[in-house]
Length: 310
Picture 1: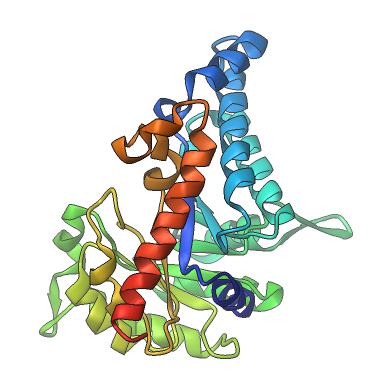
Picture 2: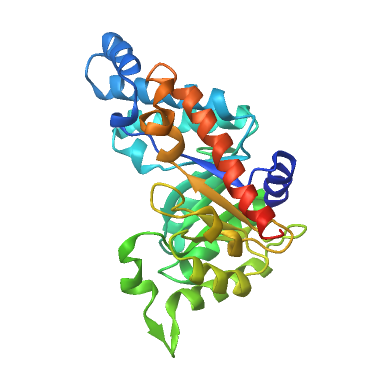
């Protein structure tokens, strides 16, 4: 799957991933009102609105982007109906040829970790049958519990030719409370990065590992260091745009071949119509605004890479 991700990025010249993190405040009124007219102001009504909103954005952008990253919490908040929409979204994205990175941030040990891995990347055994459930291509994993929490994911990834992105240095302001702490004179995130590289050695694609890393766009100097520590790991970069990450700061997350990183934008794309820059599209044109935001992001990132000679 890492080979396919790299191929799609190269084919589209688009090292970006769209975060499908729907919030009710993002959804245009006409979509909400139509959903509420059919299902009332209920969980089912909210989920119908989320589904139609997602579908509109996917239809408008799938030919431009290699991958999407649905954040499961935005669906879980609506309970069982929300998880059904998460599943529909994953399935629809895959029908459109998109690679799906499930932003689930799971981390546990033993049989619990294996169950998470099976749920999102593998197949569950039911009697004599093996049945897929959510079936994402990659998921995000929290390494705080160590190898006991990560190895079950690696086992399933090897069985299914799928991958993970391990949290190494996250983009949120308080990440340093733990991730920047010195251990034997070195920040913890560096030690995690080295471990990601070791895990990756056991599951390699043609040029890159199936074990990637999450490194926030808001810490470019740390990204430069981690790029060197993890030369074969693909880096998933959150924090671009809305959280303050700038394209020119991200060139060091990429290798000299111009590959090795994929930059995420969520609200900057899916709620683009709310920005002054795209206000002319209006609520009715929310999906077209998202498409234009994707085109602008691609030009921003690839332009910075060209300027840096990558």
